[in-house]
Length: 91
Image 1 (tube, rainbow, N blue to C red):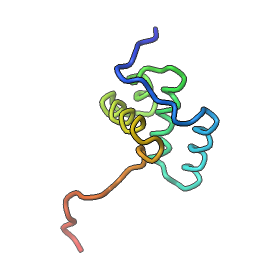
Image 2: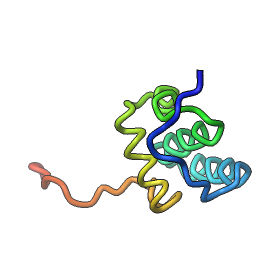
Image 3: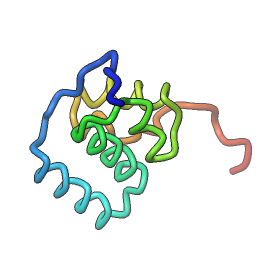
Image 4: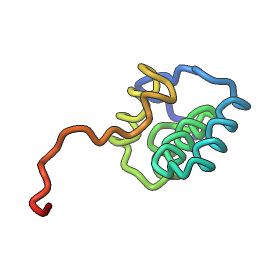
């Protein structure tokens, strides 16, 4: 059963380019980016957001967020940013 997603995925990269981006992220040891790119790859093969998110082990809501940042910024949008946040208590 194919379900439709609320937001359509923009194809910033071809499937071959997406595979290459996954390989490069693996070589650079960017595990978070690899996981997010694999999520996008699942969307490319017409998985619903819910199913694609389950395949990489995140919630549907996280998948919706990842899809939104992918559509806005492509690979660079999916890169995790750790800016801000609470300051460390220990020096």
